[in-house]
Length: 232
Image 1 (cartoon, rainbow, N blue to C red):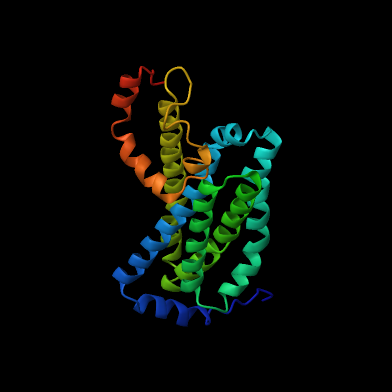
Image 2 (cartoon, rainbow, N blue to C red; image 1 turned 90 degrees about the vertical axis):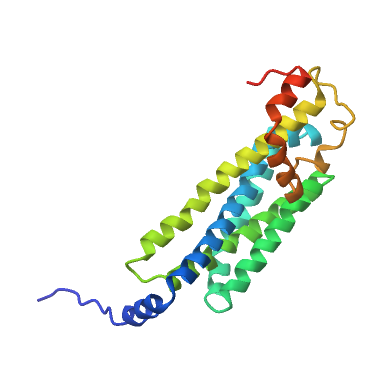
């Protein structure tokens, strides 16, 4: 007597529908969402790795860099997360994830092409807006694909994207920084390639630069030794 009654009947149709979906298809979708989530964290992390080169390129103070790297991104990411989640409850979640992914990727590329602090700030805000739309819709899709007793495992796999993205962000961003130092030469004076504006290469890390840096890391040690630089 006096115990609260919990209605679980509403969960039954959802779990049944999730269980009826082919396992391969569910994990295929989960894998895609995890990769997108990893790229979400890659794009937000790589900026932080490149703070010092960006600061030097635009002659910014520590306060301004903090606003660009943290406040400008986090403010819009936090404010727009809830309303976008409500939109995801009503519209096609697949399209929301696709549009969000395309938008924040484009904004990341614009960060790499920014030639002024204002352009970089707006592009960074755009990254925050785009990434705020990715997780709510993705997690809602995962919840529909997997029954209640399978969701912890599914969400655990999805969460791997966080650490994979951070790893790739530091790996690729570190490669861009090391390459920029290599091109500057042992004396620190910019050479022909190092004299290019940072905004055209590592600042913001546009997608082509990220892919090229992965390949360049394969022979980074030999190139460093050839340039007379010590690997720390």
